[in-house]
Image 1 (cartoon, rainbow over the protein chains, first blue to last red):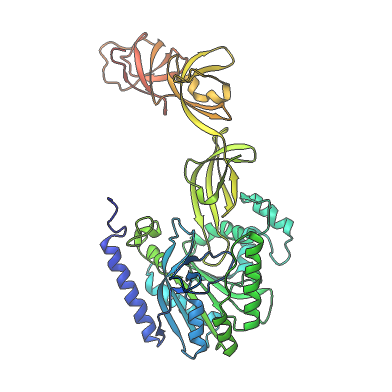
Image 2: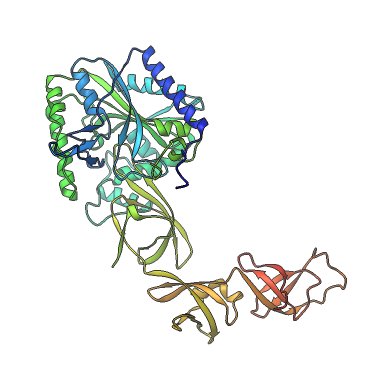
Length: 318
Length: 190
């Protein structure tokens, strides 16, 4: 085996250590508590576009899942009165491998009680400009619908399915025979906005369509919009955040809808995290939370072409 | 018919799109942290050579193109088709004008060419990178000029015209790089 050596250079591994120390300093100064939650759990996020890796821990447990994000555990801490918390941990995503993906990666996730979405966006920008000195201006902030219309000419609020399919074909998207509309808007958004994104120092896209709410609460002003944001540098998504959904009934409804989508696709359904729902029932303080990909931040910080260049042992060396 | 899932996409894979065979040049997996995963690929149309970009929802399947590359020996041209033979199986194939493309400028009988077959028919023919061909026409150059500086046009036995140094003469055999159509050297004892 000639590839036993680390993929990242020693300089880049030292830079990773420095970045992690800077992050811990950033949160310690702001009195955000560092926490450490399990990577292996009996429930998983049923989001149909996220695939968890299944594990076994002996004859007495059911299937276990490597966590795709520490979000459910961290929300349980918030419900138990932890106050603001952050975590640096490894998370796992099945079948995600590519220039910007590794099936195991380092995530920074944090939650701020009392913050609305824009308060948290401010803090994301503060941390990012600390970690990536090349970002020399505030991020361009734009709504999902605004950016979609600016780059495609199509108003998502009034567009028909036929409009969206026509635009997709124009952009070279191969429309599948079954569930043809699933994911089309997301694919169009990514393709159409890519070159504009790369011209900005950084971009915050906020107010996503409600059907991409994920775990965000819907806007009290407009139920078609979710209080979700993403932060991009050079067209690369570095962070994804929510003003968090706190309503246990709505959360259960979304989990069930996720599993319904999985069934429709012929994918395995996921056990619903009853611990999380019980915690939400107890009460989640109003808060916003965000997850950032540390490896991608290091990629941009060090101008590396792929995620493997900043990881000690990316797949297939792992 | 064989199919490929997007997770099998990689450079060189041959797939069918809108009825034409394509070869994948580049494949990029894109996945928002929370959202639809997809594959953005650059593909070359094997009939026209045109390169386009396509996006597939991850997890979808695409028909495989029955395309293979064979090393075939060029036999002869009957005026309409160029005939080739597999030196192992002796099976013969005929390529039309579109398939033969630029290779027509460079190949002569007995040459081994890389031929791409689609559904068993030649789709494209690639001349060897280097060929040796005889000069059938060129201006007599100045004697004693060995600098290779200026150069002059020379017509080869296949009809192709290349620039050669002034000292190269009619009936000489030269080596040509078919990728850029440039003279390389005089052929030695061939």
